[in-house]
Figure 1 (tube, rainbow, N blue to C red):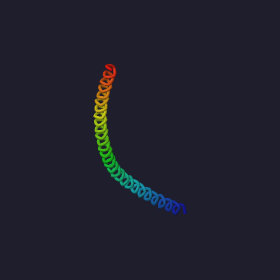
Figure 2 (figure 1 turned 30 degrees about the vertical axis):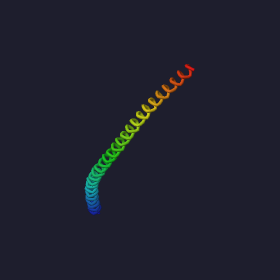
Figure 3 (figure 1 turned 60 degrees about the vertical axis):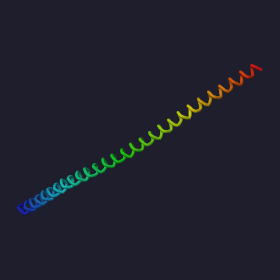
Figure 4 (figure 1 turned 45 degrees about the vertical axis):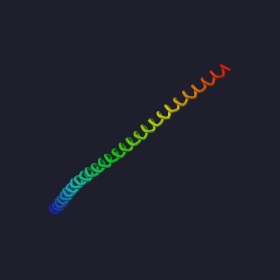
Length: 102
């Protein structure tokens, strides 16, 4: 009777050992699959980040150019206004001089 119980315990132990080995193999293969998937996703993410950086760089470059053009236009407008103001001041001076003569 004791031999039969030991036999059954031995068979159960052997089956559990096989089950644990099987679970270990599956676990290792899943880790490999997850590692590959992580690497693929990381590569995709890096690619997307590079694309976004390029879009942002182009957008900033375009905005910089637009700001530069606006600045140049405003500088020209300021120069024209200064010139106009100087002309008006000269006209005013002439008018004041004429007014003083009379």
